[in-house]
Image 1: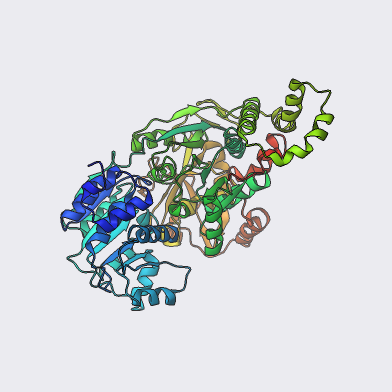
Image 2: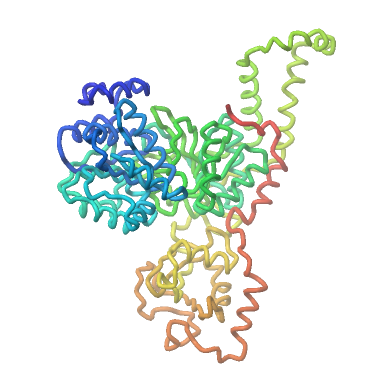
Length: 615
């Protein structure tokens, strides 16, 4: 089917499509719309971000609901406020000629009373985040007992964000005979479980292969020492003068820190993460959409609401904790038929993850070199030359030409060009002339962490595995435990790895040279009044068996997993004193701990030519 007319849409929707400038349906639209229009069925659609999924479920829902009724007939659940608002706005545009249509967005951070009032006026379609929707149901501010169509958009991301219970509770208030349409970029086990529980014999369509990255995006990785991660980021930005990018970090703290460093170094950058107020997030996104911000540093969760077609690059400053998340990240670029680049900055311990991602996305990465200073100077110089060549002449300058010509009367054409371009070139040259080579070879020695880059990812050959007597019941997941260990032990981001959390105990690895430090630190260490015991484990695979095969233990297991009375005449005080003197303040880990050195490594502040915004 080559046109929207062929899909069976009515005249009101076709007129809106014409106004929006859509010419032909995307693959997911061409596959999904006829199925949803022609039959009452459940549907699972797997397609990458940016392939037009909103229209794929939006047009059929708008055509099938009764616009003349004030009853809520459609419910669309999305993971974030930004995506909720985006879907709402698009549904309104699609239904602009559907007289009487009322689509209401329901999300946190805005007045629940106002939202309830809008629904009471008669909302045929509600677009909601799970948390706020569950709250409104519990307050009896909304009635979804008669909906005919429910959509789970970005289902994998909603489950990654911990909304499984909320989704289950919300759908329990809906009719059993409704149609459920599930749209997702990936199909992890949790999504399959939701589909099995709430859907009846769903039809399935897949655009590309499951979890596969879009063909419009090329994938590159750059191998550097951990301490050079930030310097590498700056060089990649400078080597692409027209970059309009999203930079992904794993944590909110790292996101804010990297954005602050970029702004300090003269880049037009901004941060987007969960600690910002809704107003701050709106302002950041408005600036980014207007391209006043060139480099948006974001967490994975916050980036779910980014719907910008012109993003040229995605830069993975840190790889995601879940490999499948990479698919969502790379889907931010290469949208609306355009091409994009997904770059990954990796240290030695992360190289094996690249291979795992390649298997999932069914695409090969190209290993590239961080450009040296002189390459960047050349790129910046030619970028400036092209901009000048393409600049339209402002004839208001004509009245000053006589004075300018007199000033340069003795200069030849070549001298004048050299003088003009030297204004900018000299700044970049001075900045980069003494810059070092940031690239390292696979299998070489990582100077910062003291690791052989040839070891297996996960640390099987030259690392020590430990047992620790805290687990999920103590409030830890693997990420929180990793951050906890890095902070108290004052280690770098990549020095703690292969963390595995069980209910009452956990495992983790460090390099062998850190073993003495780790075991010594936990000799008498208390956390929240409880002794934390760390011992070397013989369980190399981390399978979670606690079979007594541990060495290096210093306490009797009869003490109840590390709990004991303080009978050692002040040993606990020594522990508390060590914490107060050495590790009470959060330490910048990984690249953050060396951010100042990273900025100095490329000879000081960035040239002021970078202080601009793309308009």
